[in-house]
Structure formats: structure tokens, C-alpha cells
Image (tube, rainbow, N blue to C red; front, top):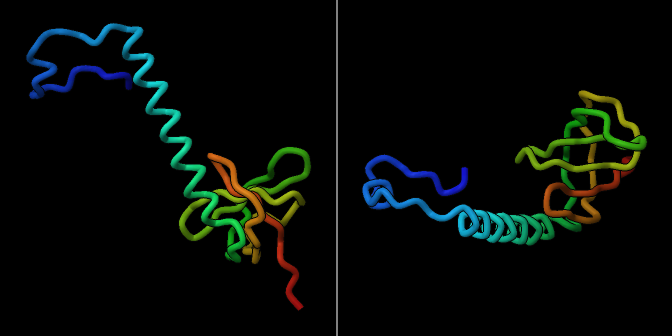
Length: 105
């Protein structure tokens, strides 16, 4: 929510609302910060090997998997849903990881 009054706070008691344009600017700034932090955190996963569960089909023949930490990994191939796969994280975006299935011998 965009800076709505919270009962019991000084801001709510003041009766003054943040002007719409300023609230929108603040919201945009916080959203940008959130995505910047998320990308940095996701980039820390690049190069890691993880075990992940195939949970749903993705776009263009890909599959969405979830790690034990519930991070989303997109693998560019169709995998059997409900199965676990060993995956290497190869790239990161601000909202999900990208991986490749590791072949096991």
C-alpha cells in the first residue's frame, strides 16, 4: 500500500496526508530499491548447484522449479512436474534464477 495512515502512529494522528505525487515517487523509489537488492541477492546464487522441484510448465518449453528456499528457477527445457532435479544456476534476474539441469551419470 502507498503510505496509508496506520492507526496509533504520529502520522495518522496528524491528519495530514502525503500528497499523491510524493507518495507515488516514494513508492517508485522503494520498488526500485527492492528490485536492486533482489537482483544482488539472486546474483549470489549464480554458479551454485541446487536440488529443485519442477512445479509448473514455463513459457516456450521451459519449466519452473523451486529450491528448498522456495526460490524460483527457470530451466529452458520441459521437465517432468513433481520430480526433483539437480540444477546449476547460470544467471539471475531480479525476480527469478535461470538454470541448467545437471546430468548425473
